[in-house]
Length: 212
Ligand SMILES: C[S@@+](CC[C@H](N)C(=O)[O-])C[C@H]1O[C@@H](n2cnc3c(N)ncnc32)[C@H](O)[C@@H]1O
Image 1: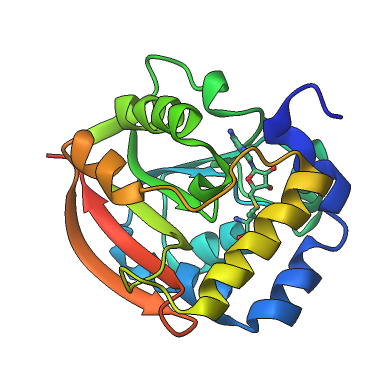
Image 2: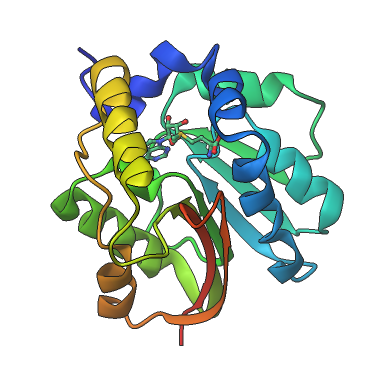
């Protein structure tokens, strides 16, 4: 067992992307790509839980940020991300979790790509409060995750969610057991939903939230 459950993705880092492709095709990437046009040029960006780095490449290719912090709990995932390319000095790779954010840091954009589903409600609430604290007023929280569009999701979506929790619970110490009530957390923080899109037949949603 890993001492820090957030870092359990070391064990699946070598095959995570392939597995995601096999199960979801290009849907998870499409859901993340949809967020990119919302990033204004000159932004200070936090990507947390970006995994092996595909999203970072996309951000650098399609937008013109001022500074990007790439914060990853899994050392192996972080290494994979760093190996992908030679990166401009505006990119800061940081090994750690939301607990490694400094109180004085501020971001215009925070991206949580398939991160928030990993946690049980209490830990999720802590993580989201920490992210909210470093998001500038007027800043955007770009969310993408497994979040069924239908209030009563079809059987295949429930089965798929259960299988993922079982698999990643065993292999990566993922603590969550069911998809969280993300909406309640965003509302509790006072974030306002601006735009939304769904993917993979309504099993995945991407949303843009603004901090007022
Ligand atoms: C389900 S994977 C998603 C990876 C990537 N975003 C993707 O879609 O391919 C979640 C990632 O979040 C990282 N992670 C988990 N908890 C974290 C935390 N508290 N802070 C930073 N990264 C975290 C894991 O190491 C893992 O790489």
